Image (cartoon, rainbow, N blue to C red):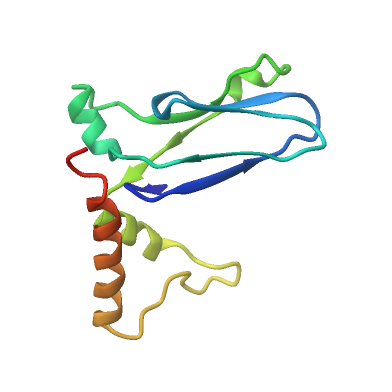
Length: 130
């Protein structure tokens, strides 16, 4: 899950063969080479919901996949990536837990939660109308 408008730095590494991390809708691709770490940055400017509307396709999903024929499991190397608006992103974060089962995101007050949502809204608004 990604927050619309947030800048992300991805790092990749491979243990076995050359792979290629490919986000087709973000126009981003990076080879992963055994023994080294490779990087790229991206900033999603449309939420998944906005892209579903834009593409007139309610089943649209952003996909991260391997773009190299890298072995017998190559066909299975893909995952859906959701880009969420601020409120949905915050609600998703509130469902996450740590390894011991405690909430990953905890607030001491409603104001504290509102402040974080406001920050997320500012991040997301930074890409609106581009």
